[in-house]
Length: 158
Image 1 (cartoon, helix red, strand yellow):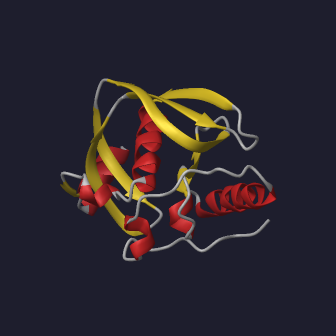
Image 2 (spheres, helix red, strand yellow; image 1 turned 60 degrees about the vertical axis):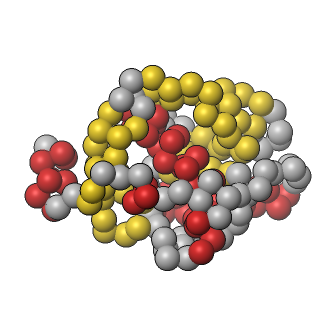
């Protein structure tokens, strides 16, 4: 396992649509393990493969209880709405005001190719949507209402 470099939003790879994973092999296992280590080291709650330069449909989401590996994920269902600050490991030091669903359900494959569903509310739902956007070349700065000032961000955190 090893840490991977997280690309900046200026890197063209982050603005491309990712291809589906077809091979569930040692190369994929290494990517997943490296992404897990990179996510844990970064202190983030989600990481998408294009953020480490791999244009495949792979994301990791830290639900607070476990780190979900989502391969070839699709959004099945959303409900409600939440508006709040959102940041990104590829957009260092900036936070924007973003509307996302309050609830989201995804369908994905695990590292062995087995299909499963996962769901979450609040931060997990936000993270599902944010990371799946990365797979389509979308960064939160493209869907935010506006950037937040430091004072606004601190007010949200209180």
